Structures are given as C-alpha cells and as structure tokens.
Picture 1 (cartoon, rainbow, N blue to C red):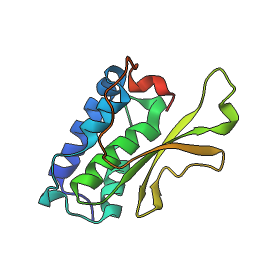
Picture 2 (cartoon, rainbow, N blue to C red):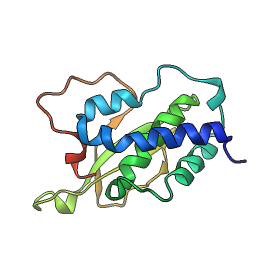
Picture 3 (tube, rainbow, N blue to C red):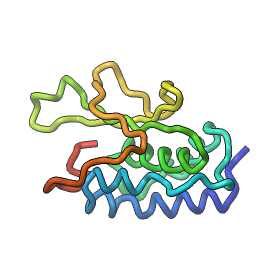
Picture 4 (cartoon, helix red, strand yellow):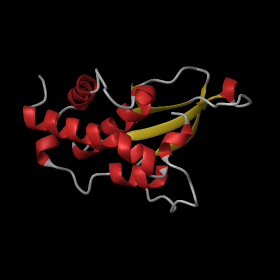
Length: 149
C-alpha cells in the first residue's frame, strides 16, 4: 500500500529543504534536526512502507545528486522515527580510501540491528551510529556536506 498523498508531500518538503541544510549546518545540528519532537499517529505505518515512500520520493533527485545515501538516510531516519520505529543512522568510510586525497563516506539505516536501506559493502567500516542521542555542539566544524558522503 502506498503512502497517502499528505505523507508523500511532507516527505517531498523535507527533501526539498535538505540540500540547503546539508551545505550550511554542521553534522551535529543537522542530525539533531532530523529527530522528530514526537511520534505522530499519522505516520504509524509499517517500516517497509515508509522506506518505499522515501525511495519513491527520492527516485529522481533534482538536488543533492552526489549524496544519495546521505539524503536517503536522513529522510528515512526522520520518517521512520516519526512512525515510532527505532531507526539507527550509521556513518562509515571506505577503508581503501583512508590514505587517499578524498575519503569516501557512506551512511545507511538499520532497524533492530538489520540493515534496511543503503547496505554498505565489505570495504566500509562504521565510525558512528546515531540513535537520536544528544550530541556535543559543533566545534568550529564545517557543514555536513564536507564529509564526503
């Protein structure tokens, strides 16, 4: 079953605003903004339905083309949390690029210790898992876009 039109519109609105936030905010503030203030009954849907809705809304991005996993990860994390699902947003790097001029990053989503979106390859090592916990304030950090995700 597809998400109702109002839910898809809400997804599109968040996704439309994401590029500006990614380019202007440090990762700690960006992540804090993705934690919804409270569960909303209108979003109580199966996790698979929410994930499919995020993938459908983001199928043809007109912005943030180079950061697909970050865009999908942030949106899926936000909407799964709105629906009451304990989503975890994982960040990792490609260990084969750690000595390269540009490090390759990746993020993925898990539910109940099972990867449900953007599964990482074996070359990726996890650096950080975000479960909605409080994070330290930014320490002269650059915008989230500078992380190479």
